[in-house]
Length: 172
Length: 103
Image (cartoon, rainbow over all chains, first blue to last red; front, side, top):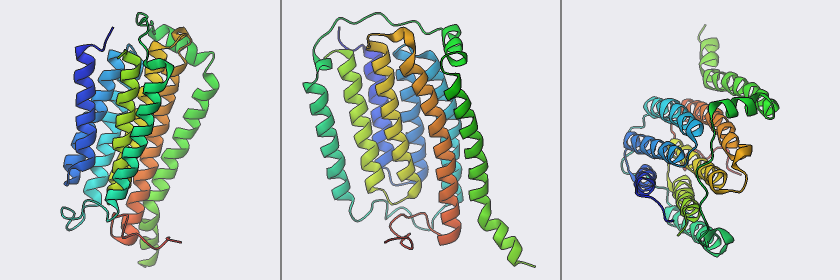
């Protein structure tokens, strides 16, 4: 069995979005292309049978992180960002990324997973199973994640507000 | 090519694109976006191994991805808050102009 057509379309959409996000010069265009890449990845998860992960990806990445990135771009708008999009050592960085991809592709091609195998039918992951797993076996990671999200939210607010508070203290 | 190898190759390509973006872009926001792309490539690997692996009923890969998405959301929030703080301090978000902490 080879890859299906919807999978290929979603993969092409994701890769095109990712490449556009990393090569376009305007930051807002990059954010929109990045959103396309995230949405394509959510579609890939749905295509692979992971409905919960796909919908979580759509909610968190397309809904929240893309908006966060757009807000950050608009709040840090530089004066002339168009003509200096890439760093002076961009060529070396591209070479390093290409080498990493070559090594990864070689590892995938030479490993056991590249040989044709019989594809099992899509495993069932109903909301009942996921909920039971989250509440029984994975309840400790769930609590740790909840604590970490709270800490990250408080930390983000404190980091982003520090400069303003100092400015207010200096004013009187 | 079987679907698992296809997923792994797409994930490797996405990882390389994210790495190239993180290494070559000057805007700190796009460096963070490249790191997010690399995280997503790893998530795609988890989903692919869950889907085509031997024991999908354990739901390990799926739940790891859900936790990973939560961690990535926290990372993005803190990272963008740091970029905003640096922008207020240095009045630029260009990573090659922020040289005050260079060793």
